[in-house]
Length: 150
Image (cartoon, rainbow, N blue to C red; front, side):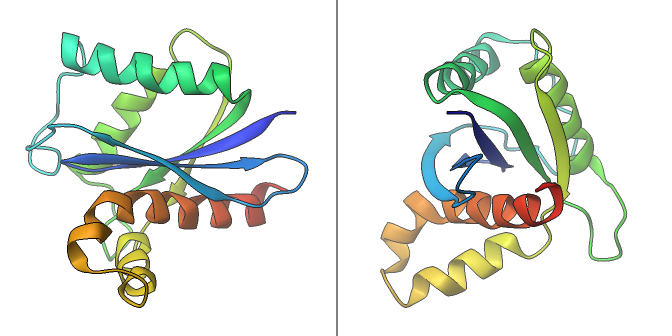
């Protein structure tokens, strides 16, 4: 059974959410901790050992979960413009998808993290939120993507 995945990239974490392509019900999946401190300030060189480990982790998930579509959250500015963060997402996508012919799309992710935080406030304290907020943001990206592409 094939699945879709959404990826929410940030400075410190990458959130993942998946959905079965038949049922189209997204669920939070995993948070990968990263160190992209300059993510929103400068272009990141993704050709290094740390990124290779992250790529391997994510491509292993692609294989184990039978992922056929990837939706990348694109952090557009409030006025809809693409900045450095968007270019970093696009560059990471190139590295991640380089060795496959996987379908991939970019989804406007404005407000997904703030919506995720709002949703989580009613269920857990801020310390616990930190571990799952990016998964929930990815879930919101995937909900949007599935409504567009299904």
